[in-house]
Length: 309
Image (cartoon, rainbow, N blue to C red; front, side, top):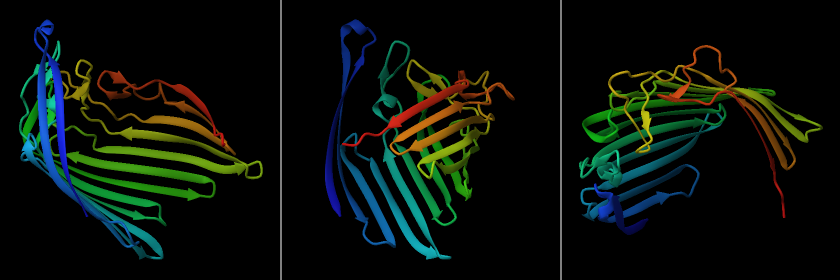
């Protein structure tokens, strides 16, 4: 059990509208009290909990509570672990979401409502099967985001996000297949756009050559996510924001395929990869954000040699 007091002082300077007349100064002070409780000994059950509550200044009304649980047990001659996570917080948006001065963008004392967030997540690991399952649900009230005009704003209603994921690996002899599948659903895609499905698959063969001295991996991996109206980017504020209402475009629905070889000889590692090997096949909509395409095909290689004293 641990208790603490935290006092934070933050000072900021922002330009005035007439940049030659000096700068505007801002100062924020926060005082928190909190504690931590945990159990890390033993093999069956571990947990930890953290809590802090604001007492003065901008911290009044703010709080952050979170906890983790780790339960390990035997099932079907295997070790199974369950992890549970939960959090609840009521926190002001960051200073620059409330105040910002520049030549092209300017806002002051906006988004003053605290963001109220809750999240519950569970995870199940089955070691023998190389299986990992997870699911979670999060709710946000007064979500702070950048709108279609790249200006920060708050959505006063609740937004819920539900997610689930599966990681499953297989191997037979020298052949290996790694798989990750993620599903997520936003309760309001106009405020928090998300791809419904994201996939990652990695197929490779791994073997030993030269009497077991040289380890070789040869394989290919693919990444894919379904189409959605991704956030666009504005360099002037270095932030992603919602696309303008007119001329919206979908991003996704395009696989990125890489082929590679990894060699490991004693203290030396060498790799060569052909990134985005499928460029020019199918559609050409390979964007991570509107107007920001992925790199085309690239040949990458590298060498690592560890030295010992």
